[in-house]
Length: 178
Image (cartoon, rainbow, N blue to C red; front, side, top):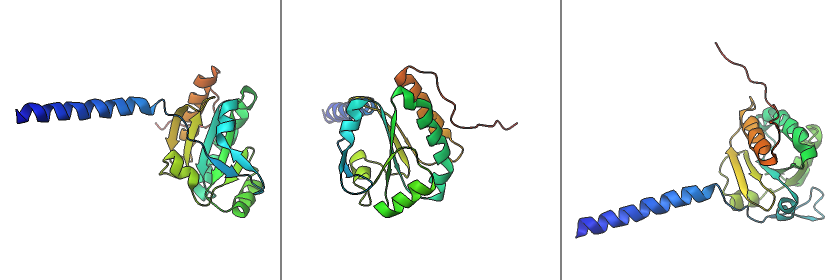
């Protein structure tokens, strides 16, 4: 009796775990309201999601992010006309983020979130974390970590192309070692 009860409990746990994993691919993006770069206006990310696909890039002003920024700039440029919006959310104070954005010629909407509210609501644990969100708020792809060679940016590019039913843009230079 105990064995069959234990087997039933284990089976239920396995079924619930696999159902949770399957649901991960259709998560809905949480609502986050942050201050604009000048600190005077609220920016509601949910409103951006309602207009079309958005790439939320939870990032910082560090040398690793510097190295992969060109690939993400190429990604935004490649899909801009098709409706993709990129939002860089920095974990620095607004003045530091502004200096970085200006210095790096950032070509997307950027926000400062020094308290890390965005990281908490998105459940992000790595810096940077890239979250591709479809029109309406469905999380399509999450890619965490920094790849200065552009591997993560290219992975996001493939997901954006599929989402927009467009040709995949090459945003990273890849070399093959022999």
